[in-house]
Image (cartoon, rainbow, N blue to C red; front, side):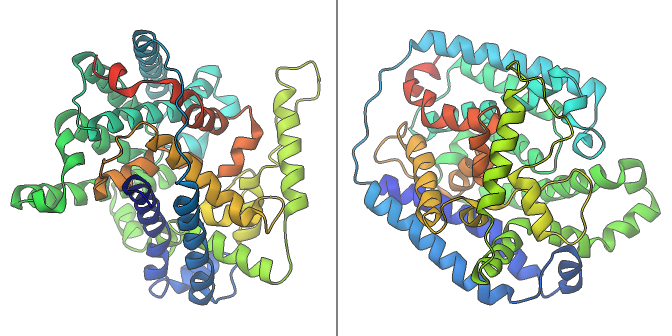
Length: 413
């Protein structure tokens, strides 16, 4: 395995650990909350010890064997044209974010429906994943040993401002320190363990608690209201919030375990998944084709099915991303999906590695940031099959359009 493939696999493995291990740690402390939250009969650790090593091994084998295939060189678009297109998208992203901040709050997902929020908000949610992909390309430019040009820094500043104004979930808060670090201290993404000194440790000790508290504050405030959260009753609620908070952080873990257990019992969802994909795809195409039967109330998606299967209590229109491991069992043609999803993961990282120098090394910070910036592609990969979906556009941009961008020339401007 080449050094580049190893670094990409390392990044994905760290992402898996961050996604799935916290639930294993907190489960014994809040078992009652987990049992009330999920449609779960037990056997968490035994099931995890089956699915996690097997899935990790399959992904490793994909990197090991498919990584031997040489890169195909793509022609590059004019770098000036690409840069001005990215700058235009950044201004649009900022304008849409200003509109969002003036008319909505960070609780948007809990009190509004996207279909009722208007075309400007829909466009914002459509291009936001693309902007994070642009940030990923900028980060690749940095770890390749280059500095962002003056104009590129300004573009990144626009993306930062827009990301602050359009925060609508606790996870989106993490984008703020990531972007700030790229703007002010890009060398953090180049540090190896040998270069870490007491100053960096002190910065981490100060910043990590601030980020964690901010994420929790936004996440809880979105659900119960910030005015209530700042009262004595709100503080008491936070102290007793463990039985709700920690189960909510473990959706991917319990989706994987519950669907594995159902698969071992002979329960599969291929027909339901095919119906969900085809009905949603047809319904979305009816918006742009003269089909005259668009149903705004339809919510027949993979996320909805996962929510109905995995969770105990069901809200009217809620859904839950299955996560990357659980998607193996939801993908039609199981057990062939045991290799389909690992190949999909390899393809995503291969598309990022296409822009990296062969001898580049990813430190822990980079290993975490890259999957975060493309998180939508890892949380619910089957969404790419809806075609008229931001996730499909993100996937197409990462794996196809991005290959035509000369990162070094574009972001040196």
